[in-house]
Length: 615
Image (cartoon, rainbow, N blue to C red; front, side, top):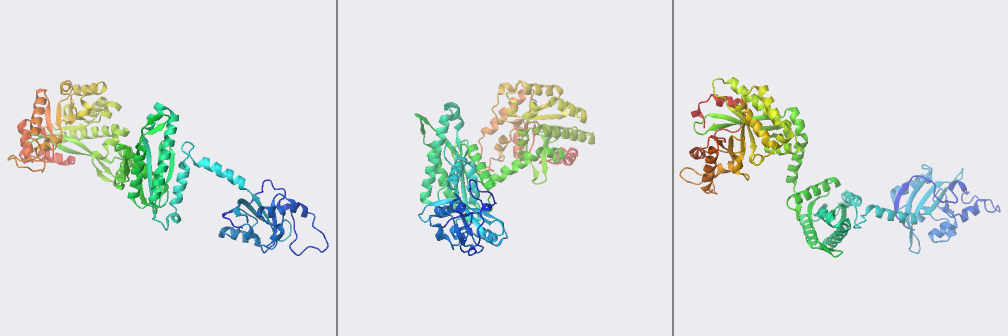
């Protein structure tokens, strides 16, 4: 007999056994009394429905009942003297063999294991084997074998139902992770390429199919997708070693797992084949339904990879494919993922960073174009992150707007900037006071009482309202109605100046501009960059912009002045730009020509410098 082992199991009674170990006591071989006839238990032992055999301390069969012979397909009398371990395959693996030897020696009380046995006629069966000492002081063991083939078959059917999706008949998420975990075990990939690949796909627009055609049609579509994915996997196996595992992870998400992958080219070919196969329309009960798929592709060394890490990487890449336009496959990019992880890390610590005081303000001068004097400053926030260092606002302001922390952060900026502006005023009473300009996000208007916040801040710091300027982007201001417009009017009535930042980049309704409580337009830096050539007309950049740029800026300046607004030019970097902007009438300039953003003490130095001393 031959078979495979599942190892020793804990001792337990055998269900349905007519005779148990304690019911049988057999004298060791050679101890029978001559002329004494069979012992009283002999009839029960011989006819018991449970296959049993008595084994001596050396592991040899003393006797076996008829059921044992029938189970093994041989004459029970012929089994006497045979090694019990060979009959029921106890020596095929080291762990079971060691446990059996300990039972023989008395070091262990019982062994129970499951074996797959092969009969002489070629048929196989699953058997539960139990080995235990004979009752009383009799030496030797009782070996019993129960045919559990029917139970195993039922268990296999139940496992298949448990591990497969009923709609597509594909392996489900549980079986997928089981196979993936096994594939990442070192013994699984040793001797192969040592690499693994995963295509994680999601159907584009599947929800619309369910919502419009019903879940029955949706299920038929999923089954059709499963068939095409399986076909793609089979076709891939013709040119590569091994067939990719196709699984349904849930909803309209599927996965193709490639063990021993040969590189990203193999995964790219598979992803492209899947994408092409799914683009063909599906005929579902007379309805032609078209869908596409977005696919995230990951391929890497199996060593050091975890199931969770691989699936997370594929899921992230699938999200990128969706964000990049759908109906495409995208390869995992470690650098892009690092940026995403950094973004998540920043978002998770943003609110706590406000409480810990990790933010600081720098100030960039706003200079009069005619006389070069310092007129005001723009407050620019910086995050002194303990892990990532000094971060500019473009790294975290959007995150703050998304999670609402822009409201407490904006309050802190407003209070800090106003207090600093008042301090400059008190420290330099002989100089004209400068205003401070603070950026305001639209969410601050909707999620807080901005008017009350500003009024309270001005009262607490003692700063005059006309020395505060609030900047909102053009897209936030133009077309404002309801609460935003009411807020702007209330702030303007208070004496606070309102500036439109990045003017000229949105879709401005210029007629509406005259009805807004705005006092300043800040021209977007892209217009000023169009002046990147000197007065003699020599090009400084390879791409020379059209002279129409200057005409457009001049027109916007004239329009603003006719409406009673002042104009600030951003991103002024050269004296030639400043000259041209001054000539067309810009009121103030901001940019590296005058100063980069600097700490508050540097602004104090600029306040006492003569205008001619400034760049």
